[in-house]
Image 1 (cartoon, one colour):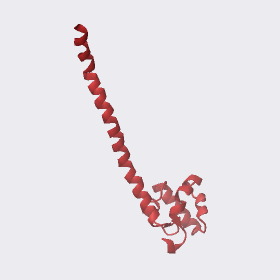
Image 2 (tube, helix red, strand yellow):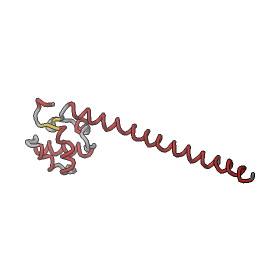
Image 3 (cartoon, rainbow, N blue to C red):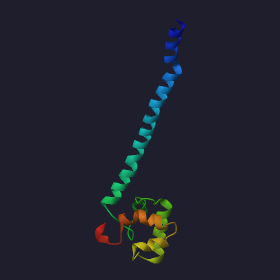
Image 4 (cartoon, rainbow, N blue to C red):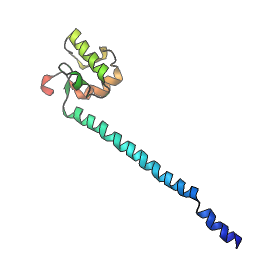
Length: 118
């Protein structure tokens, strides 16, 4: 009978309940984290995809709507534009300090030079 008494104690231990609770909590935490991040990037993409930004007339705030363009890069675009005149080709952005091939590829579909496509 000692064997029968030992089995129930092994099946129901406080640590197994704690482990079960922590395993349940971990997916919920990561799901919450992921869901809070998804709307931010989706919202930014939707804003950018519905209206192309004219890089020859855009304000700093408008340029900052582009993926990968923060305050410094936006100001660099404006400074370059003020010094060199209007962009004649989207690829000219590569000459702006802080704008590389990767950044240009990220923003290409969201920008225009044509004032009619804003």
